[in-house]
Length: 188
Length: 50
Image 1 (cartoon, helix red, strand yellow):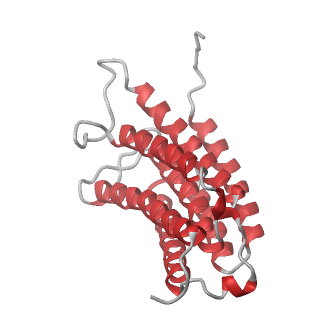
Image 2 (cartoon, one colour):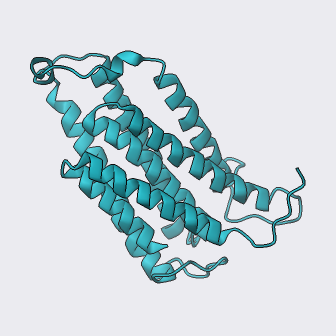
């Protein structure tokens, strides 16, 4: 394998994997939308935006190397998404107030989203234990970065761009340019 | 709501083309707009008992 692997490059790859995990959740939500024909509610779309914000911070880490600014972005996205997901949990937490969508392994999607966001917050906190990742390499060391790291980061960003574009089109077809109705009736 | 995804696409696009600082600025704007949309979708009738 070409190049030299150090803490910084390993953390970059882990950040890319983390971004793909949150992007994968949005792909799962698309499965619910188009296979089970469940229209996404406004809070569901805001949860997707929280996933995209989290993935954006992690993708920046994968693309440009780990920086506190990028981690801060991912944390803000996770906290925002967790707030939206918790808001939706609280809307239905009282017995008899109904729910939105079908449960998966006993939990609804917004409950799983809350678990994912909290897991991301904890994971980012743990990754911050390793200060060696913030040491910017000199030019000679930078030239030894394995090419696969850069290619993987570009792939992660491309997935993020695809999801943003796809969600833009499907949300535009579902809600138009304005705000979405509280109880949507059509998938797109 | 759809426009928000477009703003996020702009942030990713800036990152992909090597404009790191621009992508962070666009991303922050997108995050603030997303927060505003969340506030818009919160019910006006909220009573907290802290």
